[in-house]
Image 1 (tube, rainbow, N blue to C red):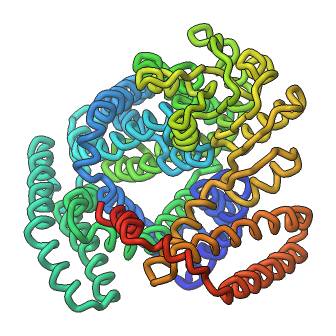
Image 2: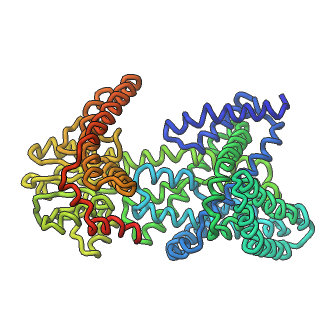
Image 3: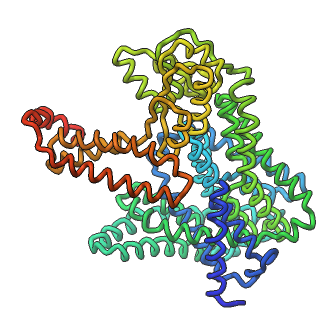
Length: 626
């Protein structure tokens, strides 16, 4: 069927079916959209074929909007603070990967211009997959996480010169056709003039962003009509895209620059929130359109070649990243997370491949191969990360790395703290301020080195190993504090401590209620949900701000917390039965509210007013001023 509404319904239905399944399996939403596109494309179900052009136009608009929002996130001040890591590690990764993969493309028979263009596309890694994987594992604040963010940030910025470079490559005589394939006002211009036109268009976008767009948004904001502001945001994106397309340049380049210019304006967050729903939907359509356009006939005709190319690209990128990580001082365990986490080809490669094909640098066969390798490399990332965490890290990360074996623990204290990130360091500093020293263990070797330079005596090692706990004095200690971020690691730590040191009191951190249920089966002394106390402290401050007595608000928080802890034990057995669990939750909420209502009827004691003395009131108000 060639009906536009039929095509739209097929795309949306495929997204609703496949994306939740892929997310549930840990593959991520990007791969879910790609799989959905493959399923409805001409090589499987055949719902969408060559007639999907109208949808593809909307989908390409999603890419344009994505780059505008990426630009909004690149606040110049934040970029400047990270300039050494971004410009050093990031630029080295892009240049080295372009040279290595471009060289491999030349060896495969491409002209140097086409090989360089392919190398630029393959140098990009997936921001969606890389950062999401680090976030899920709680590693964004690790050395590998910071290094990965710097590389991805530079890749975003590198899109600008890459998009400016590609028309020059297409204009070179040896490119294959001897003429430029640029369209629009630039058609017929030399490569040098095209680059000057790119720079001129960039200047126009920057000037318009500063002196036209921001004043316009201020006028629109005064109307207090959100739909008008949303319309203005869409107008900005479409106008800049139209301007760039008119002069024969990439619309994505213009909108990216506009986003960077507006990143420091007061409308940054409003623009993000208004455009994000459009971006998410249209970008999803783009990835489905890419999935539908993958030439599986080409893959089926030569599966070994495509598979070897995919493995080769992933291996080359991982090798370059590993060498860079080693040179920048990352430990082996962190370096594996860094190198393998960014070894896939990313979303920008789809955008660049489309532009490369438009310029005529690659024929249809090579373009199809590039798209297939990109999609397959992204699809293999979850498997690569699983192999890394299950097979590589336990062997070379924490046990056999010759450059950093577990430290010999030289002291014994009554308290052992495992994990010394933000949560654990707060516990440790509080105990030390009250005269209680602790033996501190952490598995992030870079963090251990940093903390030692700060004056903390921290020991490197995997606290889930009973021999390390033994050497840290667990057999004679009184308390083990599990402050590790990863819930699976926390569970293994508690299991090990319970098995080998049964007299040790265990106080364990949990991210939320569901993690707490799992830990309760191991019977630690106390479980501390990560945000429980902070949430209650905020609630107490809100009650005090509204005029409640300080003691009454504090007592209400204590009663709430005690009932919630008892409810946790009551609800745990039914957590796997959704219907029963929901019923139990409703019963516990009603009982909790009845208890607090009864407590509010108690007449405050005469001494309660001491909690509301002038000095305490000033103490409550002072943090808000700071």
